[in-house]
Image (cartoon, rainbow over all chains, first blue to last red; front, side, top):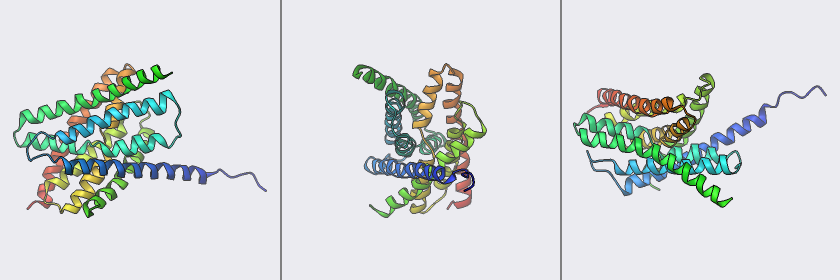
Length: 143
Length: 123
């Protein structure tokens, strides 16, 4: 027997499993976003409340998730790609945010557009921060 | 689940892993803490969604490419978290640059996409 060759198969299998987990999670997150959009549709030229709340909640959960899987305990390496990159990445959307805001701007709804831009940027970043802080405090209290 | 739901699922099944793979490829070539990968997918998804919604695309295309693929390709959760991560690492300028430039680039890409879509597929 000659020396063992490099082992690309396990690596490829691991990469394949990660990509599949992200894909499956993305489908679940996107379907949740789509379902909420059907249940709570935004009227034409109105403030996109549903998309705003989806993005804010997704950022809040992302902050909590990062603390749970990376700071408090070590989760199996598939958990963060599945839940973080997949489910929450598929649930939240930047493209709809950008196109809706641009459409409001182009239609001359300046106040609604600027309010939506500010609410999404501050709300999403603030929610991610809040998720991190609350999860760290809860984890610290639990220990 | 309706046909539209299946189109959304199909698009997201491609869009989400595409974001993951593009992000890793971009971060490998730009070995910095600045999240250029997420920036790239968000701007590209805004452009594509603009094209889809700028014209009179069939509802199946809107569901698959718009809601599914572009929604799965783009993300706010990672953008929000990365912005906080940069701020906590005392890279406040990078944190501000990340969220502000993403927003302006996304608006520009969406605007361009809407014009292209209206020109190419308009009524």
